[in-house]
Length: 139
Length: 181
Image (cartoon, rainbow over all chains, first blue to last red):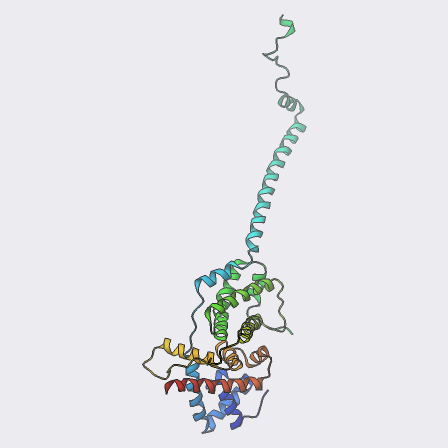
């Protein structure tokens, strides 16, 4: 809403928004600043408004307490941590499966390439008499 | 209508559960929202309750937040404002004693009194204002909302907001000057 800037509108603006032009509505600001520079009645209005502005901005409120900050942070969802943990679990599982797969694949490959050795490896004592079982021929 | 929201990217990251974004949003908004609730309610403890409730709603909404007609800061103000006005309404439902009167403001315009005393005196004068005048002043002066946003939040037009601001400022000055007598 842009209204023509006359004394009445300037008075309304200053009464509502105070003496600081930065607080005046953007659409009125340039015209109001021009009015303030040219109309001798403006200075008195601005001076009165400035006193009330100073009163208003004397009010301070305490910063949020550390306890409040901690409680607010604690109430936030922690999805990223859960996602990270899940990623770690999957990573560890994948690593273990890869290692196990590698061992199995290696054994299978060795068996396929060298069946004789593989038999020896699989049954290392088939050609050696067991010391616990006396051979019939020895009797 | 899409707005360039200065909080948009941060809220998106909060919605993804980014812990650093959560801390940044709390650092950015907690003092502002605590001040809003404190000034509207005039009670620090109640203000802290409101702020906790507000942030629970923030966490719930961040994941589904889409930039739209309102900025995230405006949305937070709306939620906080509604939480505060609900509490104020409940307070008014409790009957006050017939002899009750607003607390007298203390002398203010005295260079010798401390900044803390000045702040307390203005706080009492603010608390004694009519609720709608106080809301208009808090949203416009302390929260620095554009007049249209403040008016929309209060469900009124800009003309009505300006009227509340002017009456509130006059009443505040009169109360503080009464304290000088």
